[in-house]
Structure formats: C-alpha cells, structure tokens
Image (cartoon, rainbow, N blue to C red):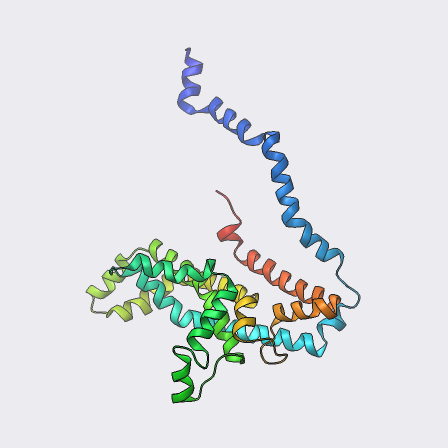
Length: 281
C-alpha cells in the first residue's frame, strides 16, 4: 500500500465514495415493492382529492349537519386533550421518574389502547362507566351522572384512545431531560412539586406540546370507541368521523368534504411535527 492509499485509508476518502455509491443505488427487487408500497399509500389520498366536489365544497361544509359535526368534533377533541394533559402528564412523570414494583406492567397497560381495537375500547368503557357498569352505577346513584350516549361520553371515549400518545411523548421527553436540574432545585429547598412546576415543565414543554397535538389529532379522528360508547346522535355525539360514515350512505359528496377536512388536519399535524418525525440525520 503506497502513501496515497494509506492517506485515503486514514481520511476515509475513497471509503466515503463507496458508501455514497451504495446508498445512492437501489436494487430492483427492493425498488419495485417500495414503489408499489408508496403507490398503495398515496393513491387513495390522490383519488380523494380528484373526486372531491370542489365547486360545492363551501355549501357542503356550511350545511347545518356538517357544521354541527365540525363544531362538536373540535370541542370534544379539545376537551379530551385537556383531560389527557391534566392526568396524562403526571402519569408520564410517574413512569419516567419513580421506581416502583410493576412499572413495566403499568406502562404496558397505559399503552394498551394504542393496539386495542377501538370498538373493544368502547365496550370496555360501557362495562366500566355505563349505567350498570362497575363505576357507572355509583356515578348514577350518587351524583346522577350518566356518561354513555352523551357529549361527555364522547370526550371520555376520545380521551381513552388519545391519552397514550401524550403519555408516551411526555415520558420520552422526561427520560431525555437531565434529572439533575430537579435534584438541584430540591437541594435548594424546593418541594418535588415545585421543582416539577418550575424546572421540569419548562424543560419538557416541547414534548408536552408534541404529545398534545398528537392526542388532539387522534381524538379528532376517533370513531370506534365513540360510536360504541356514545352513539351517533346528530348535534350531541355525532363527530366528524361518524358524520362521514353516515353521509357515505346518503350523501357521498358530504362524506368526501368531511374526509378532506380530516385529511387537512392530519397534514397540518405532520407539518407541525416535521422537525420531530420528518427529518433525517
């Protein structure tokens, strides 16, 4: 090996060139299924845009039924996100900062709604919070509170399926944050709660914001648990996904219009989280 080869070996010059060549080319057995997969995911969205009734879109989106569903969806998704923030952030802190027996099991139970079929989640909510449910009967007898088939039931169903997204995001951010800042605050006389409120929350604010956006988007698109636990009553429990399902049978153009609204929201969420998910090192 001469001096030039030795220098290239030490500096990695030709080696970088080979790596660029390997990464730049794509073997045909991988390229073809990759393109098929891309078309499989993108083609339905393109078809939705092609078949959209653009001329009648303003009239469709301003009709009373669609407007009710839009308003109810935004209200319930925002309320479900607020509920998730209030109880989900402390839960994420518990999982990230406190060692206790069975923490792995608790984390698995918290993330279970991510993989649980939404209809099953709705049935579980009925068994727990229904009028004859494990807890629902006491809510009805003691406080006169009935959750199923009400707007509050929509919020509960959406929070049930959306909160795990917030918890996972906040827990990951907490694990990445340096706990020594909290320890320093406690050594200076601050309580654990004060250290959390004054030190930890500002540190993890971006993770909380990202988790809240994900939870809100998931709540906005929730269907299975909502229709099972809260029903499909226009003006009371009929959210946008439920309105899409109903309109698809009677008014396909209205269903497409509502679907485009949900698609736009999804794109906006991805655009807002592009620094987290859509960049590569």
